[in-house]
Length: 205
Image 1 (cartoon, one colour):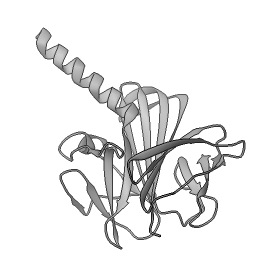
Image 2 (image 1 turned 180 degrees about the vertical axis):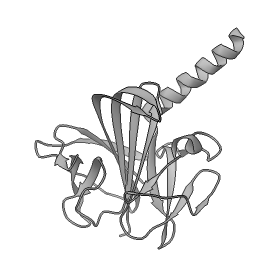
Image 3 (image 1 turned 120 degrees about the horizontal axis):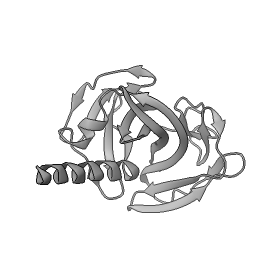
């Protein structure tokens, strides 16, 4: 019995630790589909649909509407979508509710997710980090680039920051924000909310 409890405790610890490091991101799959992944982009770590990905993406919302995947693979869920697309999903880890947000595309300059990285202009390398529709100042943003390069930026007083895209290929931007906030999710209480958001886009030229 003690061994079983210890294994369960270790599994819970790993599950909780993973929540603080992993994020959800979207990638285009052709012109009319996107794929959602959960893991570490820079490390090529993608959780499996029969593992942590399946445990996290249980009730995804695509552009604000509840939706079921159109297809799935070993490490992704696929959705029908065109243009800039946003995905939201909440998951409870012990007493912390994690609100995952992911966006692909940088043409739309309006925010829809609770925490979102929004281009200042369509296709721009300048962005505004918004929380509840308002600029979020003095917050760290990590940029991952094609050769598995990363660089950290910080938003200014207006929530703005400008990045560098020296290589062609895919870029993923990530930011997080936490609040002490109580509530319940699925009948279970939480005392803190952590928002994690990503933006994916390709530099083709």
